[in-house]
Length: 368
Ligand code: DAH
Image (cartoon, rainbow, N blue to C red; front, side):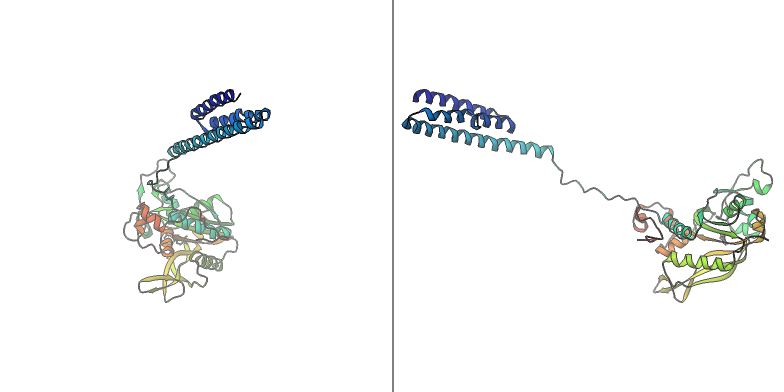
């Protein structure tokens, strides 16, 4: 009996040890464990059979079975450790990270100061009830000059350093045949008056062109035009609107604003607007101080300009203004050289540019 048991156990032992050694992964090894030591496992079965033996036989066979059980359990543990190590190795190889790679670079796109300032002034004027208008960058001499009270041969035409394009065929007169890159955004005043009935309240941000190049001039630059037409628009409205704009744009509540008599062919009277500043030790500070900075031109729309726009000056009047976007951007953000705006240098843009997500708004602030 005991010999038979010994033979049985010996066969089971070598069979189980072979199976443990052959288990190729943790799942296969667990199946071997269940088949040996589980509730219905081979060793468990033999344990159950001990009940039918005499006490002496049971002690001896029991000790041998326990030894077998321990040996198999130890073999299972050892194999499990080996398989886990293999699996870890292959996972490490599979999921390997190269720690010498550079970290993901920061997105480098920035909003150009021109776009930023256009968004800022749009936010300010739109809150005042203005809407944004546009016009073509290639204009006729009539829209760019004559309709704005600058007749051919007027000295103001020479002052504009105009880029001329070939005359257009089939135009109704020489003034409409003459084709130029617009020298200012003012022609959009005429186009808007011809298209819309008053009341009119528009701003026109856009590109303008003059043949000039130095520290403060580039052949392409930007202006924003403003036009307000209604039955009882007065110089009081002009002043209130522009004073409010200056304070909000430069974000200085007690900013001094000065209106100085000037001349533009398309406004009468005409004024230039200055804001207060101080220059201490070479640094320009905008706000109450002992100096002034010119920032824009303005005036009451000339009656002849209203007529050219198809509007009766005996019923309507209005005001207009125009300013250089680069100039106010340079003043607000301390950018010293105009030409750098158009050099497309990423280092410059990283320094002077704005976060794409910080859209200017009156509610959340113009600049973060
Ligand atoms: N168009 C003028 C320029 O380019 C700027 C300007 C001045 C526009 C007075 C206006 C204005 O509308 O009223 O220098």
